[in-house]
Image (cartoon, rainbow, N blue to C red; front, side, top):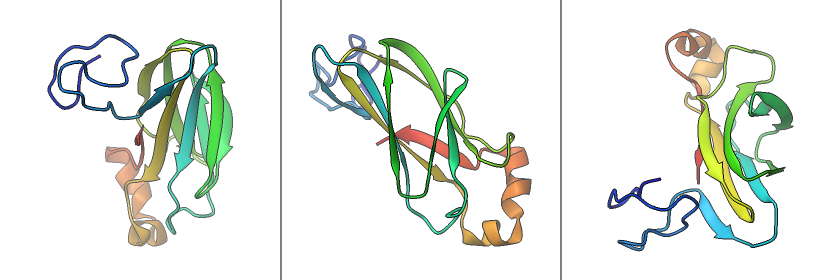
Length: 140
């Protein structure tokens, strides 16, 4: 694990950089004795308002998130992978986001489309999805 500000190597599960004090993106707080949790937030946008996104953790569908809503999942400590997929298309999905989480940690992720209303209305996003990812998932 490396600091996004100064680039120094850090201990896994760190919240702040021990070199520059930078708060690491997507890491909130550690609460001892509690399960690790991942929160997935779907950005509220006009684009894709009627389409839910399917959430996959470790290649298993664990839920769906609607426009402007959040879903919270409890996980065991360790390395995991998450991606989101358009509910009606198995080919339109985000890149896989890999992370290590420890007991008591809360990781907040947001998902959003990478295209605008014109692409949605004209169907251009389908062609765009052949060459790049049209859904992204990242810490916030």
